[in-house]
Length: 83
Image (cartoon, rainbow, N blue to C red):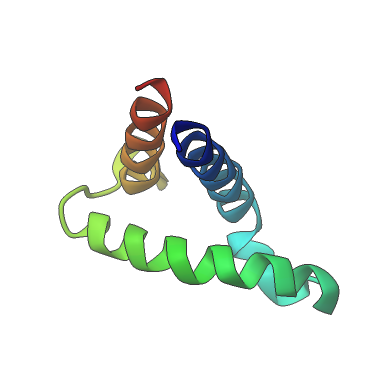
């Protein structure tokens, strides 16, 4: 059971990475990859939208921000993976 949870968390971390890289380019994705991307987008966008209420983007430069909700989610997934 523990191995299944760790596998799911590992897949979620990979999904978060792919989501963060492709989110701005999702209108240019091929239909075959969009089928893979869409479930991750649906799940992660709702989680990140909820976390954005508590964690605002952090300014790191002139007009440059880091989405703290993605970092918080990544830290939470890594902590679950380590347990």
